[in-house]
Image (cartoon, rainbow, N blue to C red; front, side, top):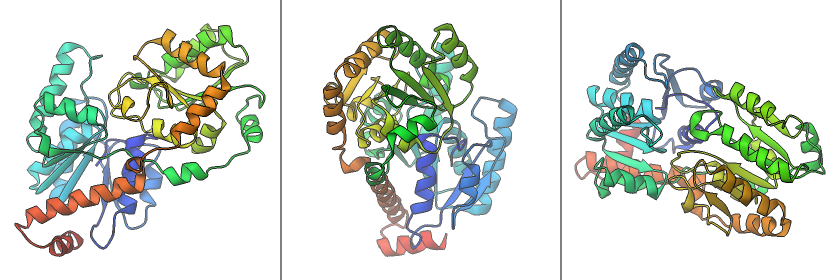
Length: 390
């Protein structure tokens, strides 16, 4: 269950999971909320039952939220799943409540970063923390995409150590490493000059990703290196604000706002440096995507970022909001292409824990273990048969 199927890491990994679970053991059902860009892809997945609850929306809407809770509870009572696995904050809260009301025996939540952050007003942050504490008591097991999120959850008393395991938000390591692109042709297709260095960011245009910070970093770098072109792949609520900032900083000839794209693996191969200006994350999936593509990263030191970006080895990290620091680190790579190439090469050696196929296998192992415990000592094969029968 996930709130909205937009073009994001949690959403893409959820689709990959339901489409790659072993069908001898599991019957996957996908439940989502308000319409998203990946809805049609979800509907076309072979052997995956798809349900949409339009009242399940990202923002807090008390009437819609109550309607969504009732709809989810009714749906789960009808489907009678053995396991409910939630992703994202709103689906995480309402989905776990609905699963409890529907009598679902195993409730799992993946932490892709917490819904409460230091950027919220204190009262709002406290409200989200209280909600998380309530539904945490209903949760059989937590999966965290980073050790940083796991440590925070333990420190806040949301769960003990044995109720949370780290399962990375995986990427297709082999596919990314195999990607080949004619950089000259691709850059021209994007409206860029093949002879100019290119810096890019791939992210939804929402406050969490701080896309205005990326524009401001571009503005600082442009003063020193007017030959550099910048591309921003993504769309969302801050698109107009980004366009205004690009114009204000007189970057129109050096900045391309590309909107949503499905060829991000090819675009990544065209970049000299990948940048991410996020204010908070679990562990940004685009970091291992960039590294597997051989592209050095300049990003923010959010949550689990340091678990994949080794500062000074395969990229550079700065504090969230440190626009000057990000610009300086970016310039150091643009001014030293050999260093950038060396860092990109270092990044290709990602451990297998970041592979998306291993992510699915790890989830299956946890599902099996929890089902085995549910059957009070029954064999794993019997547990598998129970899941297969639904």
